[in-house]
Image 1 (tube, one colour):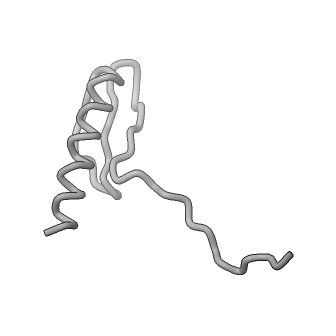
Image 2 (cartoon, rainbow, N blue to C red):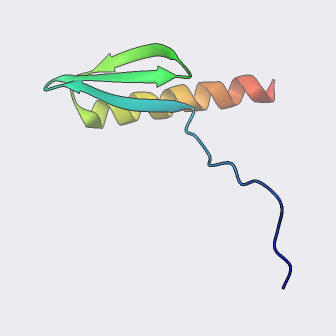
Length: 60
């Protein structure tokens, strides 16, 4: 059995969610803050929207 010499890069999400406090969630795209939310549910919805727009930019 031959071992692979390729380096595996973990896939990082386009938008990352950071909990900043009791009722503040920040959305980051790279190192830039792109939004805020008070609940995880709405933060996830907004993150999915931002990911879709980023994917559309890559296609065009």
